[in-house]
Length: 604
Image (cartoon, rainbow, N blue to C red; front, side, top):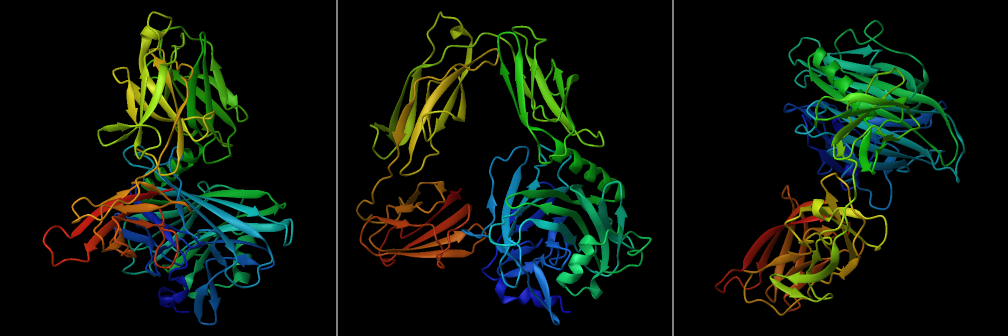
């Protein structure tokens, strides 16, 4: 079977997308159709870049299916060719999306797919794939792996329900030394539940692994790629045969291998889900690889979103479960010093995600972290640290008002502008007022709970400009004061402002003042980007940050502005990211500036 055939497969082009994890030591593109591969310009390429090399063959993939041979996959065998498998991106967008501000992760990419590309698959299922990467500057122990969380859902309703004897698996074809793809060895680490691949002659000292971090282990199989036919009946056997292949059974003679780690069997009622967590891990040598696999196991257990709320005689802590649900207990630690000297003050069962520390004194600042322990009693890393002090809450700020500003000129609400907030400090001389250390600015779209904090300011500031606003939206604002004990006051009064960007003015005489608004611009079905201060006629080119042309606009109505619906020439909505625009006037023979360029951001 020819592996090069897939690199030219026309059905890949324009059908599927990928986004890049580019933090830490691993650079990995995440596709949205069940393949662990790069997708660039309609072609597939090796993935999992580490120290300038790619280690994961593009024919690595995710499987889901049953004992009878009904298996959804990214690729299938057809005679002597490899063709697209069952997985395809789900509606409506069919694109991978970033999930911003995900707890404990620098980057989290979400892809969702279902077995609806072609063929007869008798089950109505979906897979949500979440991949996580961590920033080396914040998490130096967590920059050598990618976590993959797979959530398999039985959508049910129109097909066989419930799912019985169902399996979920990841298949990786590691090539440690691409100059000689047939000299790899593959082994099984039972303690780590990891299939480890390395170069037989040591030319490349890199070790890579697929590890099952969380899930019901069903089997580990090592397969010689030269014998593989990409058949679903073979996939079903590998997922369910219960074997744990290692060097004693296969993989001890240098070959081009792939390995499969499956989870199951599962019975999944309609509307319910099961999940499994895998890690793709690298390391320079076996020892470093094992350290990185340990770090991955600790990270998925680590609690997130630890919050401290003080009262007069106690401090109340709450937190959220980490990526993995395999938690047996939580430990709460406290210190008098930030980042060091923690002592355990509570051991709690997994059902408890809150704790009240009553052994406190007013005016003393305490620092807290929480860890989680799994079934083997291994302990996670520390959660985020929080600090708090018991004490008396401050009074709220007074007389909050909002105006809209354009440039340096203040305007009334309803004009084209950005909201500017003004307020007075809490009433002086009353309890809590003189202890104010800062203010928190909150915003939402409803004017009632819950609120989102958008800024923290010190007491020298009693005004705030909200620059991150979008056309046609109405925003509500409120404030709170914070005192020396870490207490937050009740909210101030609530104010609101409606944003309305300027309508296109008359044509400009040149392109000196060309700009876009709003910037950044929110991606939605109603989202619009406006090019302003154009000449009467112009051509606008929009490029990705990599220089790929995605849209050409013609401005011919004689006005000074052009509106665009954020769709490319094929009518598809663009994805989030940084884009470059270039404008050419239709009067290049005239003197003056008749070209212009700039950047704008699209966000979810």
